[in-house]
Image 1: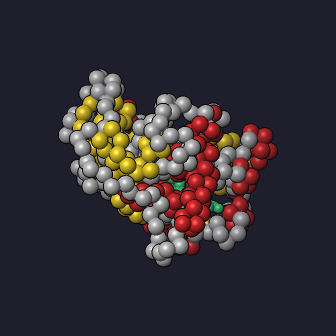
Image 2 (image 1 turned 135 degrees about the vertical axis):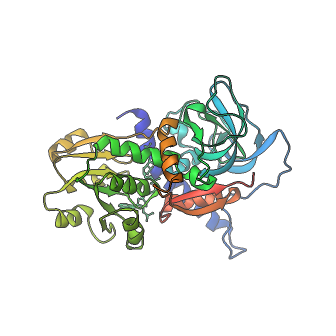
Image 3 (image 1 turned 90 degrees about the vertical axis):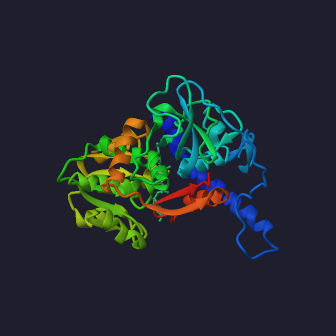
Length: 367
Ligand SMILES: NC(=O)c1ccc[n+]([C@@H]2O[C@H](COP(=O)([O-])OP(=O)(O)OC[C@H]3O[C@@H](n4cnc5c(N)ncnc54)[C@H](OP(=O)(O)O)[C@@H]3O)[C@@H](O)[C@H]2O)c1
């Protein structure tokens, strides 16, 4: 497994720690009021042409803050967009708690949070000719060092390789929810080479990536067994799951084996940091496993008679453009569970870290 893959797999756990620390410090300081305090207190700003509002980590060891930063300038091969909406992902929590150094990823402060976005092109750098000023686009800030740019800002610089035109039939909010989760879905499905007629268990199906995986598998004629709480069951069935396994009702492996005594053909794992918690025991001998989260080691996979592929999602424009077209055509549902303004973005990150988001959370900017 590559170092960067390991880094990304650590992001979910990191996010939980950051949010829990924030909750503890909020609890300690909220004695004068009973109303919930926003996780990040917006700094009053006077907007200037040369500055933009952004949620960012100012320096090593500091908490994220919402304040003014200088407007970024596009360089060769990049696109400057006015952000209309930014989708949240678990990795944003890891970056928020300052994990980039711990992960050994080169970065430069201030580090702006957020990686997915949809917006309008303000300027393009040299060598960019597939989008132009004024185009409506969606895209992703790929994890290329030194990491500094992010999308939870009024303006964001994205690599042109991960920017594509937004179809007119797809709104900014849904477009911003697509890139990382959509690419993760496509690439975990490719990794197991899912075929029509097969049965695939999707563990973590109720989340942002899972909502896409379930639909894309079902559209291929795959029988989908999805994990999710009872409150997510109807939604998962609507997205195409044939069966829903409640992971709070007992071990997933036992529940799946009760329904499929010979095991399912493959597993896509979208939950957890503990390799021992990945339900590979539900997969038949000779079956396949792919994961965006934890993955057992080679020896454990071999002993279970399965093969495994850890996946690092790469939302390049070749991957996200067809997903955007399908979403605009109504062939792919983008499940946005909540839309928040920028000054509540940290609250959204907290919701992702503690669970129960039931789809994608998106921050919109009145830009
Ligand atoms: N490597 C990469 O490139 C990459 C890219 C994207 C995502 N990821 C990782 O992939 C995972 C999924 O991402 P996401 O955006 O879909 O996150 P998400 O929206 O937080 O989804 C995770 C889902 O797992 C569910 N879950 C919680 N406990 C579970 C359990 N014991 N068994 C089964 N499911 C459980 C959660 O349900 P509740 O909310 O109801 O608790 C949630 O719906 C995350 O770990 C993320 O860090 C990696």
